[in-house]
Image (cartoon, rainbow, N blue to C red):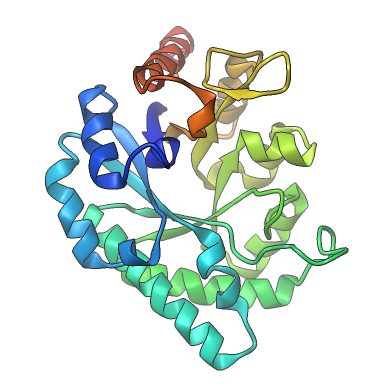
Amino acid sequence: MKTGVSTASLFLRCENEEALPLIDSLGVKTTEVFLCSFSEYNAAYAESLLPKKGGVHIHSVHALSTQYESQLFSLNARTQADAYYWLDGVLQAAKVLGAKFYTFHGAARMKKGSKTSDKFSVWGKGLSEISALCADYGVRLCLENVEWAICNRPEVFLELVKECPSLLGVLDTKQARIYGVDYGEYIKAMGDRIAHVHVSDIDGNGKMCLPGKGTFDFSELLKRLNGVGFDGPLLIEAYKEDYKEPQELKEACDYLDELLYKYSF
């Protein structure tokens, strides 16, 4: 396992073109690039980032999912075609950046009763088509557990893998906490399909914070991940209110690195 920081942790503090050199200057070696606007969903923008990333390895990309991901499953042909246009741009960017994984939320569960109303055949068909397009760019589709999106419950992932065998997973400990399900249940469901993990901590007052600043048992997390053979990156994904100075992101990585060294993961 290794540690890293998502550029999402710097969202509203600086743009990606400043975030990447900042992460590099901190000595962090791995990142996920959070593409957060339509103007960033293209190869040209990704090309502009390459000279700025320094020695940082871009493991994955993540888009602002509410802008088009739900519409990939639309029954309206024109709506769906427009969504695929933006998806194609994101995948072009991923290929330029060398990212091999795409963190995906998919359809939003916004309507009343949608939290437990599942459309496995529809979602499975859509995910298979999206995964095939990802493969054209050398990218793997990774469905993240998100409280308000497709994969809100562990059993959803298990069902969707039946429909889309190429599907990988992203574990987000924060989202598991929000939904009220032990993150270990998602680990069991995703198993050896976990591509990367989004990590954060929580303090005694229930406020999110950086790893090492709260009460979350990261040693237990690492043991559980090791139990399913996970050997990918732990990517810190925080909000701008969760810390004061960027240096704290490096300190959080150092905290996790010490645990990885301690347990030899």
